[in-house]
Image 1 (cartoon, rainbow, N blue to C red):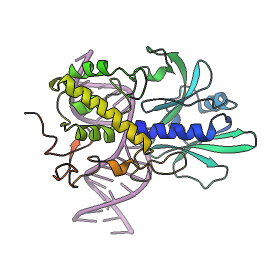
Image 2: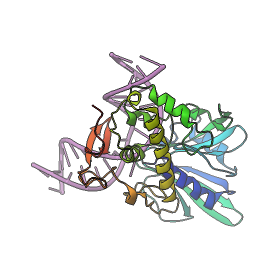
Image 3: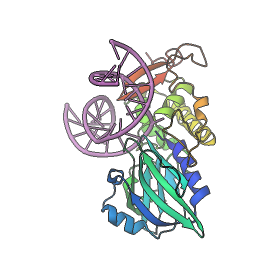
Image 4: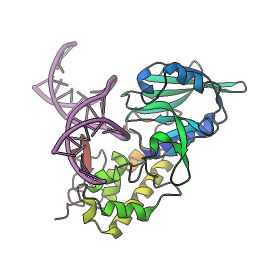
Length: 287
DNA sequence: AGGGTAACCTGTATGC
DNA sequence: TGCATACAGGTTACCC
């Protein structure tokens, strides 16, 4: 479910509601949500309890809380993960997998990790200094900077993409080239730039690649401003509220609806175990 | 090395 | 109602 804008919305929600709180209790309802954690669930709880939530970091779709100079708690939401901040004794949420009891002074709250499909996870990890000098979890050293990071190198990404023969969509989704883009924002970026999703990266001019990557950044930023994209119960911010970017979608999930530019019906094609949405007229394949 | 595909899971919507 | 199928905001392991 969550791509960069949704994860950033969650991050901001945590900053607003639980920054400076300390973890006093850990409850694990489903161990499968710790699948990327190296130690046992007990060791996880032991290490996390007592620690202070001093800051919330993000790269692409990965979120982490530094716990010391060399350790952190990483959260990845997978396809269906949510983080909700609830009052103590709030009604139960479906598919809650992990609960962190947090408090500051007299104020006590719960940070609930919800995940229907179990593709997401929370796990403890070591922090290392990445190539750009930023401290990141070891497990994400292969994840490239996202377009919203100050170290993001547009020229480098354009060069990489221009050397690849894979389709532009799979390159935009490749988190080792640039991170944060998922199926929604890839389809939206390609619609905005009138690009067919199967066009090989090497067949697109550098000038146009530059426009495509810059457009992806604009789309991500606008979606962050709208609080992300929600079309069902699967994505909510930390308060359980929906984001509004779904109202701005031009292609993703718009199958059969008129293209906002030319009125041709948006088509969905099965692609790589998922779907690709595009306008067959505005986004013709290069012949 | 790079590209494509299947696998990991659960829940909901749709059609017969 | 019951059953089968399709589909869902991601990542990774494993083929070629």
